[in-house]
Image 1 (spheres, rainbow, N blue to C red):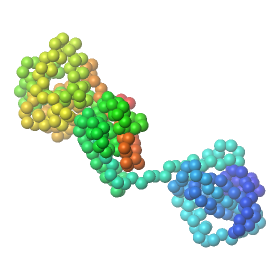
Image 2 (image 1 turned 30 degrees about the vertical axis):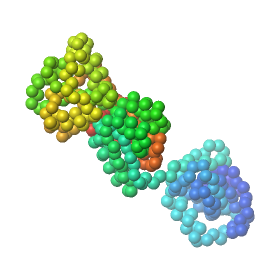
Image 3 (image 1 turned 120 degrees about the vertical axis):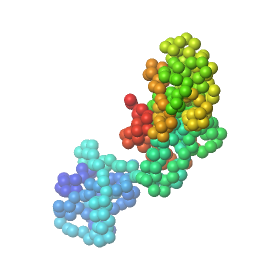
Image 4 (image 1 turned 60 degrees about the vertical axis):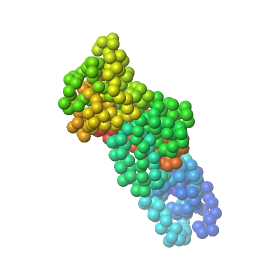
Length: 352
């Protein structure tokens, strides 16, 4: 009887007779994980148990009971009960793994969390375009979800978190700001690197200062605009200038820094100075040269030998309120689809 019940029901588990006020003696008790309730599944001749069941709760036991098809009797089962069984059998999905003889284990999928309410993301200003697009896609996928952004300089964003501002996700433009955020206790868990970037020089369309190469930034009289030294972009820019001294001249760093006419909090402020005609050259991220920006400026490539690689980390904040949505946002950013989207905005995908 044990073997026949196992064959008919596709279950390989210990079989124990249990009494039932409705079905009588001789029914078989199967321990599985689903719905957190007991259901009775009769195994008539030729009937197989469902291989699919929706919305499982991993680790939660439930008792399913069957009657061997050759018990010589057909028990009474309510129509309502059978309707529930049939509905579950045809509307769900489960992976069955036989670990050892007469043992059943069902691999369960996590129940899909409901993503609603407001999700607040603090992100470097250079991430404005791709993150807005990611937010729109998530809002379409999860009706009721509203993604709210605070774009700005990475240092300023970190300080806002440290001063008590609320956010669910933090994505600065360098690992240093993430490390400092960890030390101050405003982020939690692992920080994932999700994108990379490079620097590029921009000049006005008329290029009145005749800047043709990176070394020309050190020419007398050039009005140069970069981010301040505390901002990631400003730090990276100064690294590039220092490394280029071996090619552009020993005093190139000194000459170039003397040409600074302004130091901004973020890249967007540098672009604003160009629109006002207050700078001959600037250093920004490659990803900041959008289709709109490319119509307003010319670009000069910086050689890889002295062009640092910019890395972008992302993590949950300590005071995250909408954890499910925050984790979904990070997962999308790290997913192949998210990486393709970032590449389309001029970023270098991780692993490249």
